[in-house]
Length: 380
Figure 1 (cartoon, rainbow, N blue to C red):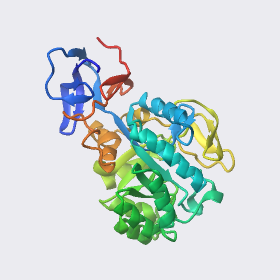
Figure 2 (figure 1 turned 180 degrees about the horizontal axis):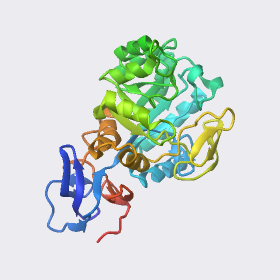
Figure 3 (figure 1 turned 180 degrees about the vertical axis):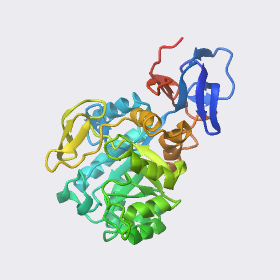
Figure 4 (figure 1 turned 135 degrees about the vertical axis):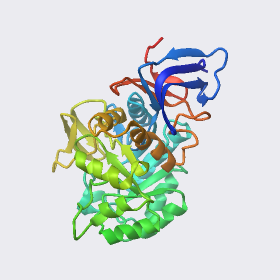
């Protein structure tokens, strides 16, 4: 067990606000309220101390995909941990049902080991009209029996399923997921405003990467975006990489949903933290140029190369959002959605010692997960 530590002097972002010259005490794997006598004091004056980031929607990184082997999965997990994501939900991409159930089995083993927080199935139950970087040949309607197969294959670790809820079986699948404690997310959808309202009433609670892979806002046909933004039961995912969203769209989402209903995600693929080149996203080939991932065939945006430390810095320095609101979107809100807010998502005694140290310019300097430095800030 690592020695106890007192991280002292930082601007600490707490659920109650920002504590200047604050301290966080770490004993073993947890945050505690009192420092043991043998605690090591680490001076972090001039830095920000925030909770570890929680990513709801992530397909891979570090040159590896969550659809690969256990070694591939851990390569991607470690790549994102190095950028502050101490809790990650692994997202699949549309594939044959047999392959998806096999992936679910492998990922559930890593969830049982505590390496990942669970599984998000993005596809195959999505609209061919809004398929994005998913293979149209492998798409299928969201028959509740098929959706249930994936949930069962995850052995209790299915956290979220993205559905085009307007398709046959969509609403029944939403109800089934809600009954089993799995988040039903509306995404890759061609739904109308009215159909989206119906899906929310049936139990859908998340908008998969709001604005992307869904009809645009219209003044006569407001579409799913309006329904998802206006309903207090819905949390909206946003990809804040400067590519997926215009800053004005992000501002619109924050203004209408409020800081309590936004979750920043990466939607990252293999190239996150790895560099430009050719990659696979499921069965589809992707070209990454200047950090932007697009399908080789058709040119559709294919996930992102984003890491959450970059999303944090952009939100504060470019979008000019309050630091406390950004922390909620990166940590507290997704932790609450996952039902993990008793363990992660904020810097409070009794919770896991998952934290991120940033300098005054919001550049990542250190990452701690369960009391151990993943990225050692090398401070005195």
